[in-house]
Image (tube, rainbow, N blue to C red; front, top):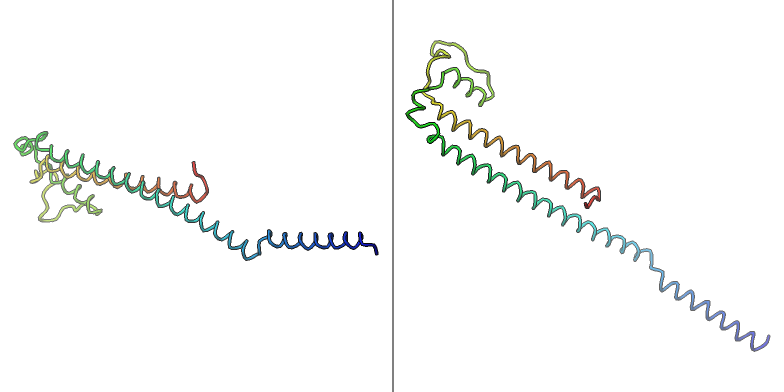
Length: 170
């Protein structure tokens, strides 16, 4: 065998060994690849969790601001009842006992009581004035509006969280 062939063979063999070593050095170990995949998934999960927390915080702030607004308006309306229905006017127009019985039954979620020896006739005047009823009804509408606003905010939060989980970043 000639020296040139020996040198060529040694060079070829050295090149192959060097190439294999380089391939081994460049190609990550399967465990290393799995760790990189786990790390990337963990980073993505943290990002989604952070965005979900941001959605929750923004939704909570918006809902609370709306609730505060509704409570403020409701209190102001109730405060104005005596101005709009002055006590002397309200006293001249008592509500019928039947109205009060119906309202109270609806508030309790019961059927209204009828008759009985102690029951006032439905058309008898009650001790409740229109101003009293207006204040109670205004408070009830305020509570209902606040509950509706909170439900709407919850629905918005659910939609935003669903979009986040579905990868819709809008």
